Length: 414
Image (cartoon, rainbow, N blue to C red; front, side):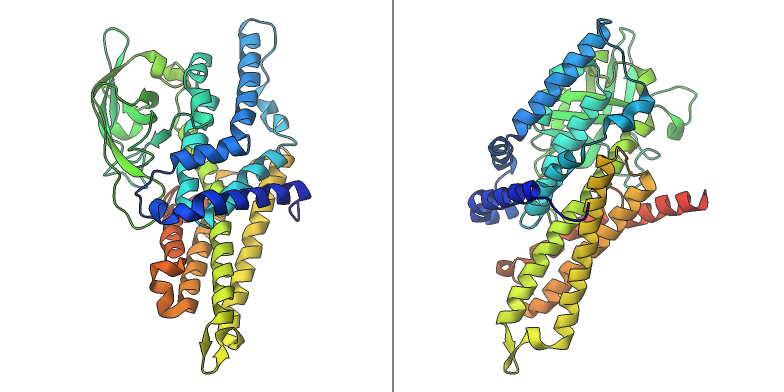
């Protein structure tokens, strides 16, 4: 893939029109965290029929799984997974286009939507039992219910599994008692459904080596507390909070996959690859917006009797922005083309893309602010928001340092 198709451009224009009508007029409320983003996201999902498409795919999947369970159809071999993804390029493109356009104004909204529908919904639909998919899946993937993905803890950070202290203890009646706390949880304050990742309390097994278990929780459960939104540097349109569990009793019906045997660290790691891939689309949106604002300002701002766009140093900055934009767009096209061919990035490839995208978004946003000078430091010119919002890309989904580590391990093992 080397360029957007005409249908892609039509969708992009429609998304841009929606953003100008529904988001830009309310940008200050969203940016300052006064208005949760979920109502406008639901309106966008409904406007573009994303909920109906998700529902149709959901019903098709459920029907097929029921046929397999009844012995009326055969289950596909896991080796056929890549082949089943052939021709999915348009589907990926139609997902990335709204991410790119939203990131030009509210990158936080992409985070809120991506974690709810992508990470949360993806975990349920890929790892859940048929009953779990029917119970929670459709509501989450259509965003009728908000979902959070709770893995990070106050003392863990990048060592998410090794330092994890949240535990699940087996009970005599075949249930589990959950205890622990999570922090920096996207959608945490408003989540209706929480994907809670913890360790099994296994006697005689070192804490770092204990089995990882994933549970699906509902807001309002006894012993479950969700904090108010935390104050932070950027992406204010993505509410972030803490989750606390004290002796929360759950049955195996809430154990994702229905069995401890179906639990693994690789399941959670798969979501890392997905999350890191999405950062590229967000970075492209931020870079495109910074470039637009910088070109417009450079043409209008006069210094020493000339528009600053005539100064070679400013031209150099603008040219570097274009190089960054082209590179990021080509990465997005690569994601789309790989999906079309039924291929998926390895963890190290996704890490390399995420590392480059995050660094590039921050660099371009910083240069955009520099072009604006003192005005760039002011809220009304918006570039300061782009810089604050871009900075999180180097932290969440794995820090830059973790991406470097993943890439190095891969190339040294060849």
